[in-house]
Amino acid sequence: MSMFGRDPWGGPLEINAADSATDDDRSRNLQDFDRAALSSRALDETQQSWLLGPSEQKKKKKYVDLGCIIVSRKIFVWTVGTILAAGFLAGLIILIIKTVPHHHKPHPPPDNYTLALHKALMFFNAQRSGPLPKHNNVSWRGNSCMKDGLSDPAIHRNLVGGFYDAGDAIKFNFPQSFSLTMLSWSVIEYSAKYEAAGELNHIKEIIKWGTDFLLKTFNSSADSIDRIAAQIGVGDTSGGNTSPNDHYCWERPEDIDYPRTVYECHSCSDLAAEMAAALAAASIVFKDSKTYSQKLVHGAKTLFKFSRDQRGRYSPGGSDPSHFYNSTNYYDEYVWGGAWLYYATGNSSYLQLATTTGIAKHAGAFWGGPDYGVFSWDNKLAGAQVLLSRLRLFLSPGYPYEEMLRTYHNQTSIIMCSYLPVFTSFNRTKGGLIQLNHGRPQPLQYVVNAAFLATLYSDYLEAADTPGWYCGPNFFSTDVLREFAKTQIDYILGKNPRKMSYLVGFGSHYPKHVHHRGASIPKNRVKYNCKGGWKWRDSKKPNPNTIVGAMVAGPDKHDGFQDVRTNYNYTEPTLAGNAGLVAALVALSGEKPGIDKNTIFSAVPPMFPTPPPPPAPWKP
Image (cartoon, rainbow, N blue to C red; front, side, top):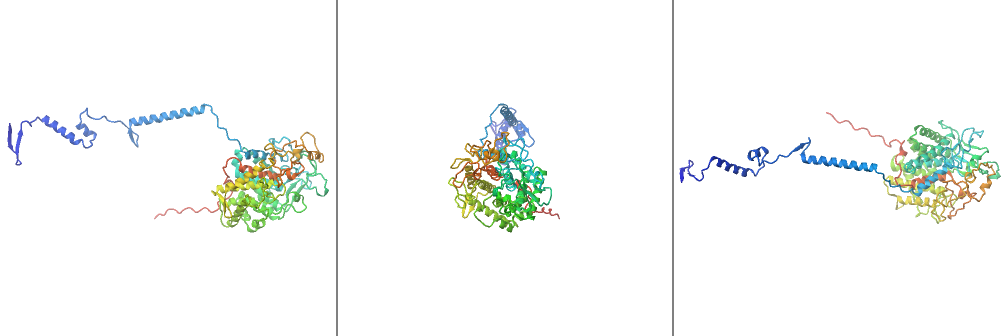
């Protein structure tokens, strides 16, 4: 049955009995409708609780508030657990590594240059004069010449110590000072390599043994001096001189009983400047021993002042030094000594002197000549130019030094070109040995110096991020310089036509009749007098004592060599020769970490004034 009524809004109103429902049914239907309508948008938890029954409500997640971030507790627990487990595992692994014995990988065996370096340094132990240290490690040597200087009534000063020059017992301060400068230079540049070879303390002891002696040869505490002891012992036997001296006699230094004359000089610019260079370079080596370093610097300043005040060569014609170590010029020592004093003191007056055009001209910096580029105990120009090129490469001081430094740098490049086999500045033997002294005797001392300069300059260029240099229009890599040095040192160590090592004690085939008094006379408690030792000099038998590390004078221009004791042009070693060899060997030894760029500049002040601080911020 249906009922009809009138809709107040103008339409019929029909009420069906079938549509009549209870209020509960209507409410439930409305609830279903609301759920469907609201399911299309997200509801917060409160709204959900209104709409959902208790069984339909989702489980609430648990979180951990870490302050800066809120994370699920489950993720937090898992993360912390993982970290703790990883830490425990790492600790367990470390504990196992620490407790379980394991073997270190052995270091690679030392290269030939390092092996040769150990031996070459031993030569200086064999050349020591005076009271020997207990650790000298040359069994056939003992205390010797303990009255040097004191036995000369004209001097009567303690001149004990230092080094004997060669196969005799004379102490020539000119080549001895050059040797010490070379050794110090090599330590300044390559101290890390010396330390790696275990020889740093040894070579520093050698240098100090020499510088301690040099400080005795003049009044090192004074600011001005008027004389230097230039030489102890006499060697001139010309004109039939049969007076006992260090060349006429053949006896062990320990047995010398004849008077030892001291040769003094009063105007010796070359010797004084070279001694100044030696002390200045050594002061950098010993810079951590402040008192001793300052003592060396003071002595170097005094000597250099003397060299400038009293001009002259230390070896005038007819003097004993002129027969053996004649100096041809002293302007190269001015450049050399000035450079070292600048590095040791930072005083720009020394750099100004070393870069003075007139001094450089007299030293030969603007001309060639057959011996140009040959670095030796007599001519230091090539070494000085390399040393000052270093300053330009790394500090570039600019005006007023730049013009002369550029000249030195350019000349260094030319010298390096002259060492290369593609150029004909110097001949080579068929075996490959460069003839820097143009076929004259005793070539090796010049070869080792060139090998050192070439390797050092190569390292300078690499440290300055420069891959090479130009010889005219052609570019050459720094590796070419190292290769030159290696071929020359390899020749000396036995890679030559005779398969002869010219370093005594290195390899199995080396000279056995070295021209050396101490090595050729047995230590048998018999004292052989001046002429008594001649039988050992003239003996055809090998030396009873091996003078390990001595580099002999070397082969002739045909790669020939005579292992004869009386022929000093082949078999005599010298301090200067061995110093150059040591420098070249350490430069080539080990890996290639390069040079120590900064130590030599320790005393050099900043080249340019420090810029002023910026102005304070503007305030209204």
